[in-house]
Image (cartoon, rainbow, N blue to C red):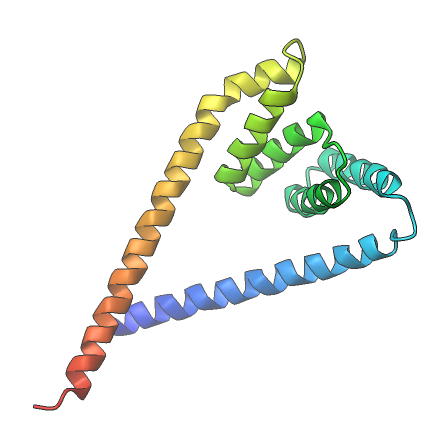
Length: 168
């Protein structure tokens, strides 16, 4: 049983390390592309990035969309640029597709708060809202349960170590 738990933890740590490496590589690649645009005015950089996000959305590349949107959020924040409402819609859909329920709900809320109520996507967003809420609540519950289980596993291991090294 303990061996299976150790194998499971090792596998989990390995997957986590691989994901971190991939995210780092993606960020490093994208930081380089932003650096190449440093000579441009922030509004022009935002326009280029917006077009890139739209192209990524057309090719259904959710992970790339989210990385580009992170860059756009930073650019908008750093230079006090308005965040285009349609990008919230793209972000909500991409985050949902990527399995990030919390981000999907947050972006959908921003979209609903900023979009024109007569827009077709606004009506679709309203229809998706309760589903995204449930997904985010479920994701939060799963995260809490995973943390609880990890804490229990670590506690059990610590107790085993104490018992093994205790002086009688």
